[in-house]
Amino acid sequence: MPVKLVFRCQFCVASPDGQTQAELERQASDAFFGMYVDAHPSRWLTWHGRGLLGPTRRACPDHRGELTAYLRHHYGTIGSHPWKMGPYPRPPQRAGTVNAATAARLGSGFAI
Image 1: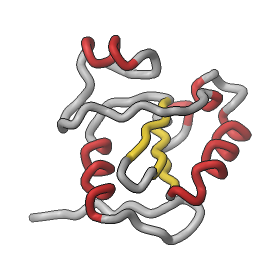
Image 2: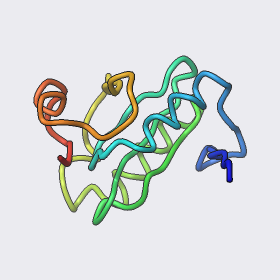
Image 3: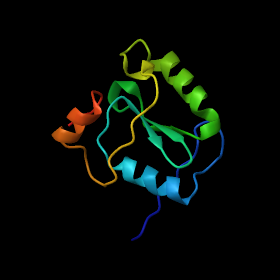
Image 4: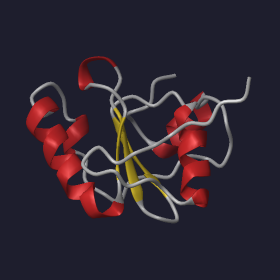
């Protein structure tokens, strides 16, 4: 049965355009932990919390600042992950999980 992932901004009812939707779908299958990731071309911001750092959250370009403020307020005392400053990395243009070489190249914050 075919399914379609529906992404919405955490702070409003905005939904991404087609290209950004495709990139958010690719990000959904990656094994990130405690990391902000940009989704271009519309500059959506995704927080891959997982575990103690909460669920995956997304924000439209207008609410990127609200998302980081929310996460820093709620999860900032648990670890340094929510305090990371931009620019945020873009994941490799492929589906699947992140391997060791990719994790080493993009820096810490990845679960392998």
